[in-house]
Image (cartoon, rainbow, N blue to C red; front, side, top):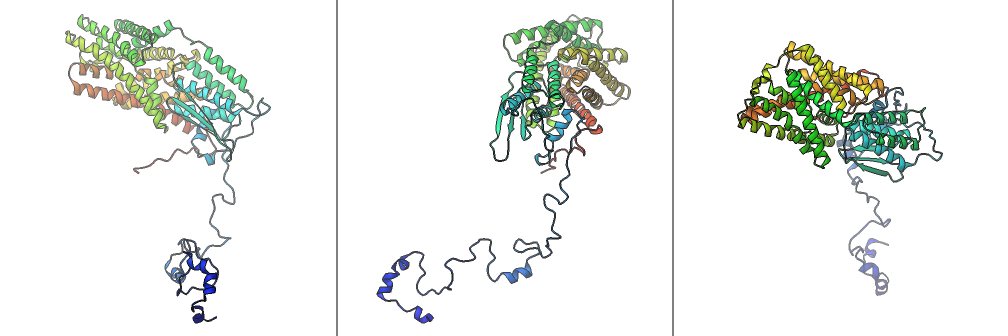
Length: 552
């Protein structure tokens, strides 16, 4: 049929037959010529190249354009895919390394690069009960976090417990007050998530060491510790009493304050006065704790008796170094443990937990400031002559100061409820820390901040070595050893200057105290990292750290 005939008007019968097509909104209008063929267009894709563009495209488009195939492509010379033909190098962990190092290495790896879990044979015939394993993991993490352990070490312990019972695809998450863990059996099954809130915190490094031994036994392939046995040991840890009674803790608080006063230039009378003030403040804090008052008010009240005794000596015009009495009392209250843990969490990437810990430290510090500043203000108003420049007159007495630093570390270890087997090591570590600080600051005339950082670095290094030797936590070997380095004198003289209306001078002294505290925390963490780098730990290759942004 010709085109002219096709355009002729149809008869009424034909119109009646094709009337639905004519009235359809998809009908082709009369007079519009279309090519015959299939009813659907062949180039319906939005990614199709328009007709007439092929030749121009071949001339203008570069070889790497998305519209054409690379001319040099061939099967033989194909670019490497995600998995090379030779396979992906297998990463194996050193089995004789401590579980802390192995689990920390795995946590810092991408999930796709973690080595597969080896089959684990347990006493349970039907395999591990996932909810109970997760509950045990959370309870262990709760004890570690409540005891002051760093967030990364808590995650490493939780990861180790899950893997010891065959739960490979698990991800622990640790914040300041919340622990959670997620386990996904496979890619097609729903994940199982459990969480636990940490509401109470207590300092008991004996319990902390027992938890580390439990995790060490769980990760040991030859121990075969069942879930029931693990729960039994965990319940026994909770039932055990602290290794030192309350009166021993009070005496240790007094000994710490007395040793700190001798460290900054005090004599025997100052030692006794600082010890009495610290013990009185400790008893008052215990009284408030029994009444249910928050720790903020406990620190405020505990800081008042040493400051009151120092002001009383100044008012009585007794030839005693009153500033050393107040400084010794501050040493017993400064939250060095929480400070080190907070900075360590920040350096390892746990910024939320680090912010919460440092905020807690700030609240405790403000409480100490309020207590001491209140007493000093009234002391100055009634005529007490306290000299802020007395800090410049600290005498260098090497032998006596080293002995005082060792006594300070020993009493600090008792306050932290450490095991008796670790007290001697931490006492020696504290003596080494002060010896290094005194040699750098008093002999070599190096700035106190740099001297403190170097001494704290050695504390962290030795503490990590001792912890690796005993397969235990590094906290009992480092926290008490940094006691002699705490900025008690800088804090006191800053508060005294503020009480005497010399605000600028006081703020400078308080800024120095903050700098010393940060130097301690960073030094301890750096020393621990150096020990891990230099020793044969982790995986077969170098442990990679997280990539950080640089200005963007």
